[in-house]
Length: 506
Image (cartoon, rainbow, N blue to C red; front, side):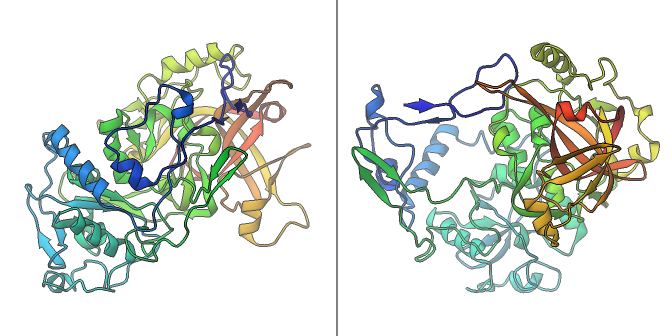
């Protein structure tokens, strides 16, 4: 049986079931049994389809990983790791997992790569820097207990996969050398792409979380299976985790035919901008991204406020936007090209905007029917010629200026205000409240709110509700910066004093 919950879709598209229950004649298999089976059950009858879940062992079985790795090599050969023209990586370092020290590799070196969460600054002893570089090249210098648990477990897994070398950014990029960081950090997607295997560590919140299932006691909870009146349910241990690094996303461009702009998918940029804090609050990442300029010098580029990589904390794309909707965008977003010209982030954006207006029927009253294109002369010259040019997102949209305040009696801590309470918004005699979906603390005061997406709540009984997602902005030298994200009913938005304005978002 199945039932339908309320979905957000565009007018003209029917709601789809979000949860389904189905009878199944077989019990839930273990991961080992499922992965080791030579043949699968006949799935032509619905009752014989297996459970979506598996019973996970406390210690992971490495055999399936070895088999999958070999299967990949047989099917793909070297085609997937063959470097494109101009993308060869010179001067890579690796951890020798047998001798437990650093070594210099070359373009023919086979290796495993690790993508993981740092979350905290490495200690002087577990990162590569000029002071300890010579010592870390000595055999057995990477002693047990020196490295974070995730790196230590990755060394174990690399050896069990039959590989000799492991690439880990904290030990294979010199952390106090800006030239070294500017050389390798922009190429991390290539480093992951050339690896025999890339381990993506999504468990825990930092580098000491380890790889669950690698060591005894790294997993302590066994799943419970309960059957009652012919119905079997299985305990779900952990929610899906979106802890995927920027370099991994860049490499996915190749396999999924999807381009990313500062870690957001360009074909779904409107949806991707509506990211929320996954847990707790997020704070701005004031560090900079380093890359080599044409002269070979390290250039410092600030992380953009509009992308999740410009914030510290765990973010998700939002439960209502995953998976991303196959809907044309309302807003046309532009970026600066390598030739210092303005180009749309997604090539078909202008055409799709017209199609979206047609799908929705009557154009929204706040949307300007003509003014959406952007040229270089509309953006200040100091922005185009500076480091911000590589990070800005430009677009025309509807904005309103409102005062943010908190009602008397709300908690005094910034975290509780940000995470649990709606913002009170005021413009003249008009008052409304809106949840700060980003859960970053917003100080009381006046801010500009800029629309980035229109959504539709479809109801089977009540009338459809139109809602807008708007960024909360602050301005510095003509550039807007995101500090929050709210959801506002369109009918409330139209009661405000609004204007159509060009936004240069940094």
